[in-house]
Every structure is written in C-alpha cells, then in structure tokens.
Amino acid sequence: MPRFGVCVLPTDQTLPPPDIARAVEERGLDMLFFAENSHVPVVHRKNSYHSDTLVAPFARMHDSITALAACAAVTERIQLGTGVCLLTERDPIITAKAIATLDHIANGRVVFGIAGGWIKEAMEHHGSPFRERWRIVRERALAIRTLWRDDPAEFHGEYVDFDPLWLHPKPRQRGGPPIYIGSNSAQVPARVAEYADGWMPIYDRYAGDPIDDLRRACDAAGRDFGEMTVLLFGAPLDAAVIAEFTARGCDGFVFLVPPERLGELPTALDEIAALRARC
Figure 1 (cartoon, rainbow, N blue to C red):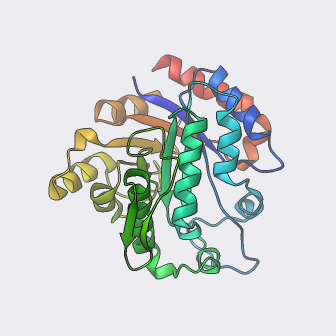
Figure 2: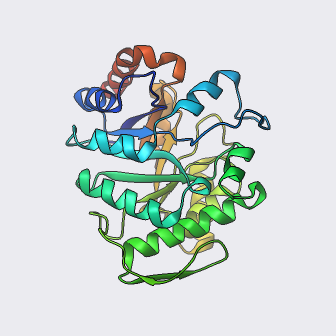
C-alpha cells in the first residue's frame, strides 16, 4: 500500500510542530514533511513560485530540523522529512550532524528531502550563486553522505573541501537517511539517478511524466529504478489519480496544506485520512 503524508509550512502563527505531528500520527497517516526557508529578502526577484500570500509564511517558518526534532519526541511511527532542506543555505558539516542527530532522536524515521531553493537573493545571502545552485546542491549532498558513511571522512570538491575528520553520531539508518530531490525541472531525473535515492516531484508543476522519465534516467545511469522511491508531492485528493500513479510505481503521496488552511489543519488531515481509507 502506498504511503500517505502531508507537508506544511510551520510558523509561529500555526499549531506548534509537536501538535501537528500528533495530529498526523493519530489519523494513521505515514509521513510528515516540513518545508524550510531561512528568510525572505525585502527586495527579491519574482518567479513562477512566487505569490504574495507566500511571502509572510516563508519569512516566518520554523527551522525545519529543529521543528522535526520536537515532532520526533512526541511520535513513534510516522516518517519525518525535510520537504525540502535548501542545501544552498546550509553548511554541509553542520547539516550532516543535525540530520544524524535527528535520525537518532526519531529512531531512524528521517527522510532527507533536498533542493536548491527559489529565492535568488536569499541563497546569495548565504554565499551561493543562483546560477550555480544545483552544482552546490549536488556537491553538498555528496559531502553529507560521505560524512554519514565514512570514519574518518574526507571530501575535496569545488564548493566543499575538508581533510579527514571525525563526525559523530552517525545516523541511526545505515549509510544515512534516504536522500530525495524535491524539484520539478527537466534536469531532475538525471540528478536523482546520479546521486539521490528518490524524487519528490510536484504533481502540477513537472511538465513531463515523472515515472517514465525517472525510469529512463536510471537506465542511462545504470541505476535500478526498483531501488528508487517516488513520492508525488502536491497530490490531488483524487482516488483515480492515486490509483493510476500507484499502479505505475509511485511509492507514496504527500498532500500540501497551504498556509491559508493551516488554521483548519485537523479538517485537512481528516480529508487525507478519508482518501487513504478509500484507496
């Protein structure tokens, strides 16, 4: 049976993260993802992801890893994921330790969703040139996996460079939590096949067919598609769509609860749980 989950933008004006996590677990759902964004520059370039209603919650979001740690402490079963962690805005050594620590607190229930972000000026405040964002994401993801796996760990790249070091704790999950890329451009399937464990495309934003495109990318890269995980983000509350994607190899569905509905989160979760019961 496919997994059902939810992704929210937790802020200081929503339910506290532990209350959100309890509500998700109590309804029999399988996953909770928290989006993240460090800040919103007052002046920033608009693009297809921008909307005026998103500016306030994106500027107010809790730190995702800290918030998920609070959720791990009050739950036992659900997977807890970053949806997504912006590696253009994260130091890889600190992030490797933070996610490993979270995986211990959660007893191995962490999913590490990653991407580059969409606010050009925000990532450049962190020293990441916008045009180089995916090269930075790739290298920091590889460095983080090296830090989780090796003891001592060493990495030498264009954006990450460190001599042998010890970093503990290693994650509870052997080799570290699975790394899923959350992005929707035509280049993503090849990126997933190269250095990730799965993909989290958004249902109405990816122009191609995520299942077929990832299969082809895996074939080209010599990866086994059967070892990949595909979680459809922004899934519609439509049993026919769920059935179709499940039959074609989708492993789970993550429903986005927009900021304007967070005041009625219990109702939104009930709708998702009801759909899960029908599928």
